[in-house]
Amino acid sequence: ALTCGFGMWFRVPNFAGPDEYSRLIQPMKVAGRVAADPGFESLRAALLDGRALGATFYLFGFVLVPVFAVVLLTGRLGDFVALGGIESRWELWHAAPAWFWSSSVLLGRLVTVALGVGCVYLTYRIGVEFRDRATGRLAALFLSLSVGFVSQAHELGEDIPSLFFVLLTLLLAARYAHRGERASFLAGALTGGVAIAFKLSGGVAAIALGVAYLDRARRA
Image (cartoon, rainbow, N blue to C red; front, side):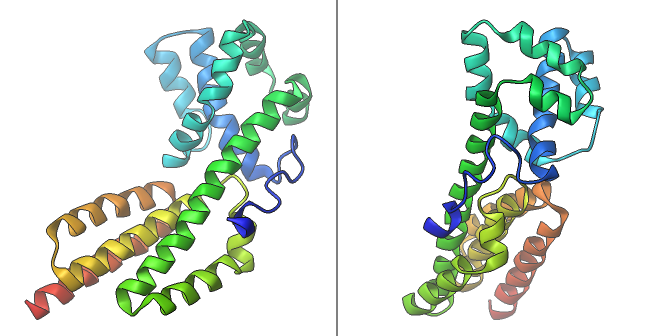
């Protein structure tokens, strides 16, 4: 948790990079357009405008619910709807209050940190499943100290969420291969699909599940 969360406050209320901005602004744009013009057509147009982010859109859209709730409760919805007409990122960042960006970025990063901690735990469980607790602890330690993992674990993005569901699928695939639990296979199919929804490289989870199925069939 310490390595994943370290630096979570970096540059707040600024973004750590363009990816953080795009992951937050897409659900914000949809919410703003629907608030300005409630209806299915405005929702459809907002969803189709911009890059398709898959499950990332829904994850960070859900994260922003408390921020939108504060906007509604304080009666500032009209002010924020007006921001939707600003095209420049620079002007938009200055037009919105600092608390809005700070709370949005920190909430999003907090979710990423939680999933990063979950990745470390799942790595431990996979090690236990294949060998023993010592192996699980060593694998979890290596992951938690990995520079690439730590750099992504406290920033907004789809890499850590996708990795979390890939690891969960690997664990379920291992349990199916070792114990033949049908529930583990079905749950793995679901989590593997979620991993792909976050990032196409999550398709490695489907391969692992397929290998587990063939291995179980061979030994049956």
